[in-house]
Amino acid sequence: MEPDYEYRISLPPGCSREHPAPILFSLHGRGGNELEMHQMLQGLRQRFIVVSVRGDLPQGFGYAYFHVKNPKKPVRHLFDAAVKKLSTFLPEVVTSQPADPERVYLLGFSQGAILSMTLLLGTALPLKGIVSLNGFLPSYVRALAPVRPLDGISVFLAHGLYDPVFPIEVGNANAEHFASLGKETTYRTYPEGHTVSFETLRDLTAWLLADAFGGEGTP
Image 1 (tube, one colour):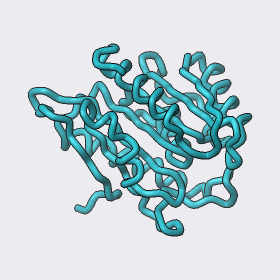
Image 2: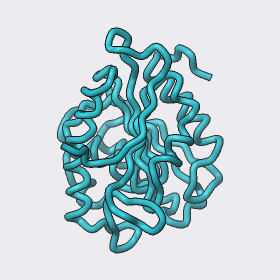
Image 3: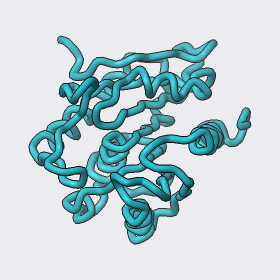
């Protein structure tokens, strides 16, 4: 059976079933692709299994996981289908690789960030943490009670102060929502637009290394 999504994967040196590594899934933005995410995460590929997942819907010169009516209104049936498919696809990849099932992370930008937060709050995926970059929570996701306790799950939220797609108020609302659930998060803002800066990459890399390895080997 063909997988639901095309993806690119890299394994860190020395990774094996006897010496499993944490696994990081990256989800790109609307119109992007898995290659740009994979290249962006070069600084983590020496310690993590990095799996960059391509959306299954054509979008311009790239791909999407779901289509939208406007930037803040996903087409609901496509969005729900993406959440369902990813919640099956991701565990299948974890079990097929020499991955530590207790250190599974999601990292998403824009549309990928929307999905990462939704998969955390709306599914029972066994996640250790998520990184959400310049995304938002749809209203129907906000209305959900988390399907499992958030204790022990780490959350890094980042947002551009000058994001023209999802203004900074959206990023602030994301952080406030997690706080309302009693979930402490790392929330950082950057003087950028709807993009991922060097500073953002530096900070999320250090955060992921510290969370997965207890600070060992962090920059």
